[in-house]
Every structure is written in C-alpha cells, then in structure tokens.
Image (cartoon, rainbow, N blue to C red; front, top):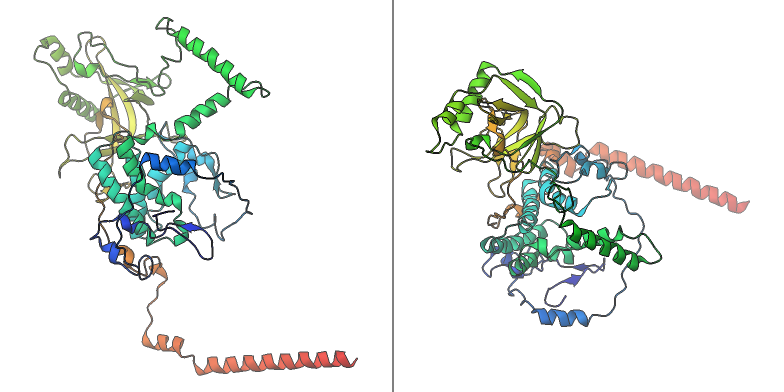
Length: 519
C-alpha cells in the first residue's frame, strides 16, 4: 500500500482505502478543502502518486513471498434480510440473447443468487442497479450509484474513443469521492480503489474485451469437458484437442452447403442478403418470420391507408427505374395480409406482445432511432402488436411491417439530464394514426459505443439528514415539545411508585435469604 494512503482499521483490522482518492482530483477542486466530509480535519494537498513502469511492477511482483490464502467463517445473517428486500428480479424478463434467465437464479427462501454467469453479473452492475434502487434510495445517493454503473457500462463498450476515455478517467475519481461521503471506511477495500486506474489501462491497452479473463475461463471450461480419462487428465485433453484440430482442418475442404461449425447459422439469423432480381430496394430487405402457419386476415380501411402511405414515404426509387416497377408499388398492396407471431431482423428476435405474454423472455419491445436529434424529434419506443406481410403486384414484391403501440414521447418518456437514464411509463400511450414501421427500422438496444458525459461536483451529499426517511418526521408544537423535554407531574409520581415497589421487592428477597440462613 505504498503511496496509496491506505490504512488498517483499528478495531476491524481491515485494510481500508477510504479517503485515498482526493489526491487524484485537480488541485483547485472543492472536495480537497472539505474537512468534515472525509477524514475529520484533513485537507488534501498532495498530488497523485506517480505511475510505475512495467519493469518496476514486474520486479515488485517477483519479489513477493508466497502467501497462503483462505479463511473460514460461520454463516452470518443480517436481521430482516430477505423480508423487507425487493426480490423483483424473480419476475424479471429480458430480450432473447441479452442475458441468461436471471429470474431462475433467484432463491427467495435463501435470499441468494445461484448459478449467475459472469455476463449476468455485468448486466446487474451495468444495467439493473439504477432500476433496482430508483425508488428506494434518496436521489443524491441513487445518482452516485448510477454514475458508477454507467462508468462500467462505458468502459466495457466495444468502441472506445480517446476523448471519451479521458472523460471517464476524470468521472470515476469524482464518483468514488462522492461514494466516500455515503459508505463507511470499511466498504473501501482494494477492489473499490482499482476503478481509478481502469480508464488509464483502457487508454494504454485498448478495449477491455481483449484483456480480461473471461475468454480464458471459458476456454478452460471447454477443455475440461474433453476429459474422459480422469487418471490422465492432461493426456486426455491433448488427445481430444488434436482430434478437433484435424477435423476442423478437414472441414475447410467440404462443400459450402454442408453444415459445419465454421458456417454455423447465428442464433437470430435473418436469412442474409436478398438478391434484387429487378426489384426496387424496399422489396429486398432481409428478414425471416418464425412460428406456425401464418394467419391471414383483411386489413381495415384505416390500416390499409396508413400502411400504404408509410411504404410510399419510405420508398427510394432510382432515376433509372422503369415505370413498370414504380407502377407496381403505386397501385398499393392487397387487402389480405399474412400475420406472423414473430420475426428475425437486424440480428434481433421480435415477437408480438400477446405471443410473448407467458414466455420467459421479453422480445415485444421495439426501439426506433430518430432520424435527427433536436427539440422536435427523439427516439421512439413501442410494443409490437402484430407482424404483417404486405403483398404488392409482381413476383416477390413483399414487405414486412410492424404494427406497434407507441409510448407517449412527451408525457410517458423521461430522460435523465445527467446520465441519460430512460424511464418509460407503461400506461402512457401516444394517440397516433401511424402505427406501422418497416421491420428493418426495428431495434432492441442501442449500439455499444461509449458516450460519457462529464460529472460535476455536487453539494447534495453534504446534507447530514440525507439518509433519514422524511416520512417519519413529525412536526410538534411548543406544548408537545415541552412535555417531551420536561416530564409531567403524573409521570414523576408513577416513577416514584415504581421505585418504591422495587425497594419493597428487594427487602422481601433479603428477608427470605435471612430466613434460609437461619434454617
């Protein structure tokens, strides 16, 4: 703990990194001068510690002695744990492929999680913590936990920019200093100190997906499954791995139509690219329906007019397109349409709201990105009610439309100004005569690009009554307050009577003891 200002707690004996992070702040930062919010009476004036080179770190690691880890402790329970806690995760449903079935890992009886994968822990940390504590904690505390959650979400993004990493490097220092105003010193061990250096490591080494431990752990688990002879574990793994290498090399010479591991179809395959074959571009969008035989029905006049106008507004025709193709789309679709239960497009799986009502996954939510971001337009969110296939004149001239129920973008959707957290009121609907979108426009989640915002210092955490519940505070008038401070005459008489009764009981006990001694 050299140069880190870490210390050992006097009574707990635990190494604490409390108040070790103000030194990373700018020299003119207001948190450096606060004496009563961190260590009592301490003003931070020291600069951040210098970064060690790779050779120095390697030499220090090699000089460390062998350490034996492992301690055993009995089962410790917290009074009221599992009784007053909100186990809403038991009913949680997520999109297909977004995470595993987290609800299955919740044990309400034991108040624990069982069988969570590493990716599930990332989902809990980066996505679900802001939702879980939104209505439980005070706003100032919730803001800091959300900032920490969004930091890990941004730092693990697939695409990182140097400018954004520098913002993250400043934000995490600010966030941990704010957390020190909330949690006790025993909370801040070495693991809570390490995020200070993660942003710098990402700037030097690149995205974390190529440096963290999870691919190696998965590959080790893959090798362990190859063990058939437990008496010779290493030889069994080597033999199975060589056979797999040979079979993979030979599979490169197979015909393309033969299904092998190298040409395995993705989980949510949308069918690939479609050849134009003389058709205009709107008829060549990739996608694949799923489910049993589609249901055929006739569209109403309102549905027919809205669907046809939307297709015309989103059609792009080249100048060299012949009049026959333009005539085909201008005539409009047939009134009889095919209705499917679900559709694969853009690498996502969508199903209608009624079809997925009793399923473990929730794939009826649709996100449509706005064409331009200004005060008049934003992103749109809706529920998928129906997947319709429209048939136009000509061979193969089919279009898939999603019939959706839109949430109100003005009253039903709220975006947090600082962290961008989106809240959608489930009962707020948008009154619109345009329920259709092209299947190609449907998305389920935003692109994995880091877009952090700079965090500013706040004074909301300086309130000493921040963690008190204001619902239990009752106003008292002067008479009631005086009654609490100075007890009434009746209370004094009752106390005197209780004292006399206690004295009488003590005398009776002493007399009994004397009688027993005489006997």
